[in-house]
Length: 347
Image 1 (cartoon, rainbow, N blue to C red):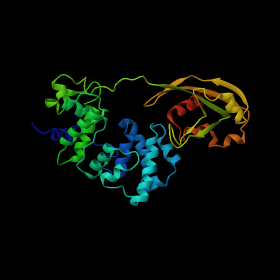
Image 2: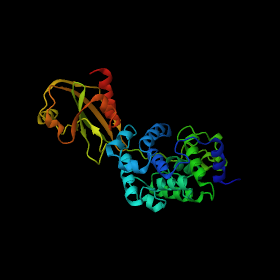
Image 3: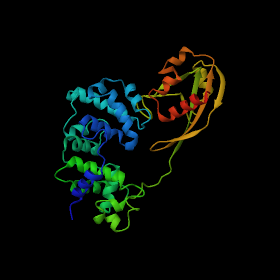
Image 4: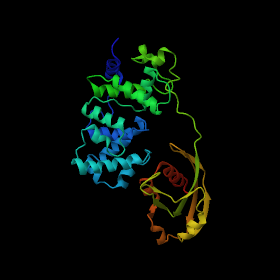
């Protein structure tokens, strides 16, 4: 029987994805795609990637941009720390490496937002260096093929997966092999309803041969998702809305949001009084939930029509901005949802 890697390479050549906009590109574009693809599906990433490289065609252009410009292009993609780290890394590359993406694995690994698998993917896909990767799709593929039980996020399980991933590496056609692993995990060896009958390595896949495909890999251990309640004040003066720039770190860092009152710790009336704002109308809009990796946010949007636009509100990183302009700015997905709701309803 041919090796695992040779079967994957042959399958990729015939059935894999060959038209992704970052395939065969330089290290900058490979890096950008790898960061965008973290926790995000290819179909979602493609239009973001295309708009991003159109605005920031080189590392130097990205490094020279403002954080707000970068986050505006990232808006809606989620996990915004990725965008901030991307911007910081570009500035480091320009300052340290003269704008040339570093070639050495150890240098790449030192950049913000880059872990072992991402650094290896850049080396393999951009420079054809013999490196194993271990993203979500590859973890699932190897866990099934080798019959590795346990949650893939567990340290000991991940250690075994890395060892096997290294052992399976071919000597040649590294870039195509790495792409084959990602393609197979995305198209055939999926989390649910895998297409084992079409898989090129099912003949010696432990999970398939032992009837354990649905069991492997083991799911993430269940735990109660903590919840947090937040009230967002949608302060409107005509078509202008009051937005605040978030602190650089933390949830939605560096992005623009309506004032947020955490779990009732700050009183709404105290906030508007402190800002010198007079309210003419108050409407509580429909509540909704937004899930993060580690908690769920219960969002209460409160529309407040104001009689005045005090100068005090322009301090502390706040600004009144036209609704249409705000919708095209650096705002997170739940905020976009709230603003679109107001915009479309004519509230």
